[in-house]
Image (cartoon, rainbow, N blue to C red; front, side):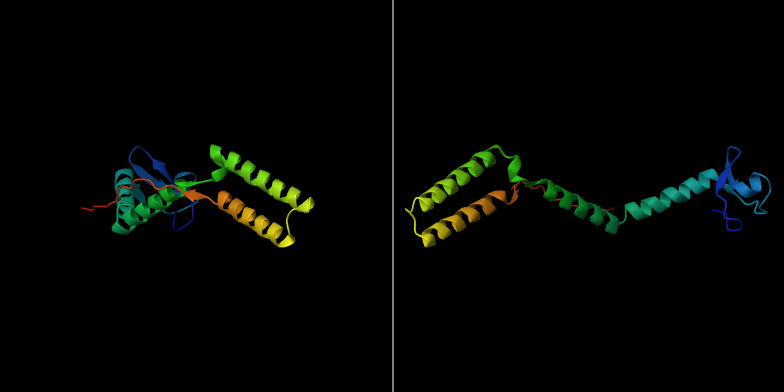
Length: 142
């Protein structure tokens, strides 16, 4: 961006950048030219310093590890056995309720069994973490 008029720089000929205000109508007196090759080299060096620094590489490794760990978390509802286990808990709960209604279970036992079934359901609904074989991530910077 031009420091005098705030316009963007544009390509001027095959080799230079110049203020668009200067180039397109002379609304700016800043005729400074920058070589495209020099500008590109400076930008690439800045990117290299930023992206290949120790801190940037360690940050990238940490982000990759975090992403990998999140990918290893499985929603149990996507597993085929989940539906069968959920149906089995629901059937046991229905049986307990039927026994209680029929007067075959005391209230204290009924409440205890319902609480146990609720705990089983909570465990079933918790995401599980797979235990993958992990290759240590080592960053070497030369």
